Length: 324
Ligand code: UDP
Ligand code: MG
Image 1 (cartoon, rainbow, N blue to C red):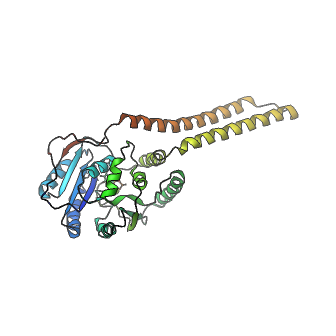
Image 2 (cartoon, rainbow, N blue to C red; image 1 turned 30 degrees about the vertical axis):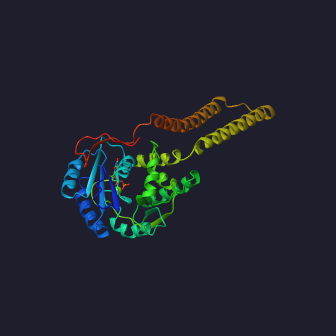
Image 3 (spheres, protein in one colour; image 1 turned 135 degrees about the vertical axis):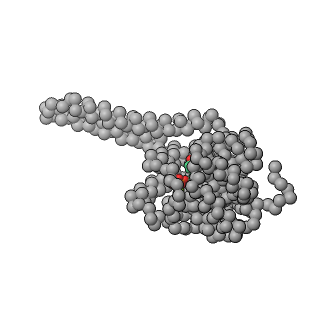
């Protein structure tokens, strides 16, 4: 239902919002100012990811006072990946930017990013955060993670590169064809390929509200990253199994030789316990790895939509569209 008389939208900005009542007023203010300077033909798509605070009420109000700000509201908290996808699938702009609601992704950077897209040379322009004021441990851990990841997966992932980026229509269309349930967007963005430019920016702290990430989430995110992009961990389990078997056989031979040649008695229960626990551990790890993949296959076979809409600025009432 696009209005044919309206001029085409040049830029859509998708912002996932989960419990962002504190960030929203400032976000709207900054975006209005920065985006109008870039183009008169922009739209912002605020996606309420099943917030439990006043976010949705505020989005309704924002849309009323600023018609260029549209909103979608998901039926529950589906996670940032789904919220971004919902926004992307409803974006009408020729180019689509994605950014966080907490202004950790400075909108002013768009002024540098958009001309790169406009040059026609690139389909994606990604922003890379330079880690200047992150805790040392976190920086080191993240370096290590990317080192390992890039050895494990085929797509090239970069440290500091997150979801803050601008895509042209071609890249958006490509992303929307990837219908997988387990969405590791960092990998998906890299997977679709197309010429990509990188723009650096200084790390900014969250202006208000609190981050929704905990250490456990980061750990799970790490596993997702590896498992959703290849089956190398399965292959590694085989190697681990072979290694443990070899060690066990070697040890058994050594004990045998020790007993026959030197007549040493074998300390029975210690070796048994060691063997049982070591093997038990390895088996659990391998089972876990298999389980990760099995779980993903299970999730994918169900073909559930990746999000459900409860309300949007266009309908104001419940809608039923969703991306399969
Ligand atoms: N977010 C979301 N759904 C969630 C969690 C987060 O839409 O389940 C949004 C959140 O509102 C914000 C962005 O994702 O706009 C990044 O979240 P946050 O700032 O908490 O993460 P961090 O910046 O610490 O990585
Ligand atoms: Mg943030």
